[in-house]
Image 1 (cartoon, rainbow, N blue to C red):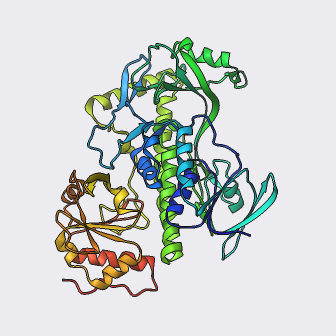
Image 2: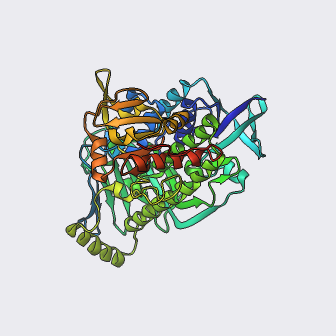
Image 3: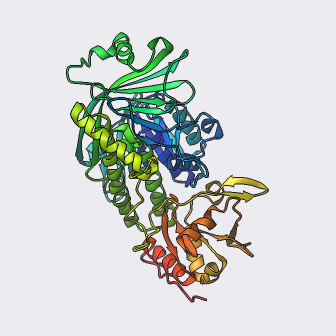
Length: 525
């Protein structure tokens, strides 16, 4: 019977990304998927800059990134067709190395991730496996699956359920779901434009009480409509393409469209009551579902993957205390719950069916737009981490750290591609000079790196951060800090005023990872 470090259930983007990140770390991984092939129709359509950075970490190639298209922004139109709210695409420079939002085609992403996963010989793919039972004890988990060849059983130390909203792993763990009180039926139609069509240049929210809808400008000639279904609509009839075209007529010349996919969905807002049960973890839709109005469902799932992957790596590869894994739920559950609540709020704005309330809404939103009372950047609604594996009391902790372009071997690279998926200290020379040799050895033991900002490193293990755009130096200056510690998932652990504070913070971090080791800040210069 095969024994793995981690079993991942589900080979959608969240499961595949989890497997890639664990594979990159050298862990033995089995990925189980009941379907024999990639689903060949679009579902998610927006990736934000955090998600793109995670895909970069997975080794997704430029061939996929070349298929992306910039998000053109979003207009919200009121009852009378007037602009009541908007999101503008943020112009360069891009702090995380990627535009804040890009449009993509999901089958292309899944194929690219499948190719990336194939690069890791320590990751084994098991398509056509349907999980029938999961058991766990203090040593690990045992999974039974039905396959075309018969029943199979595999074991691992941990399991991650990225198996969707109807998660088998969640049920096996006995975990419930908190309903956040949003349930609406919508039809989603993806179509290729085949001829001239008088359509908005930007993604548009039609906040019309007689038929709310969303129009999405996808990559290439792909366009999407999400249309709210009203009391009295016949859901069965909407299986017919003629009925679908009839409902589309209000928004587009249907003779200029070739429908690729249509599906009726019940948009929901819900979060799992727990994200961990012993050796079992939930990620992606298994842990949370949200309406699509903030375009964060998949992005949130990829944050889950990045978070749990580095923590499992620390435990399995660096001997870190397993208590680190408790921080997964502590960090991710409140973070995604806040995003789900924002998505629900936008859904209520867009989907209002009462004309008088819609008119009142329009008045309030138009005034907010006029006065600038509400941000027009979509990313303003994505919070930092507020608790978990972070330096207590540090205002900078929980931010996503910047990603500059750095010079190496005469060429520019995105920073993450060069420094790798490790803990990293970015600091000025004075702060790094203050570190005791024994503290540095402990830092290197967990795979950490030390990078000098604003000067040339004289010797290993300190590396020169030769950035072409000054993004790290600018961050330290804005925060008035001498140093910052960044986690493997690129969230800020904490920032320090000087070398003494940096040494204390590093020692505290190391003690949390390995409580049985005697780690001190040492003699500080």
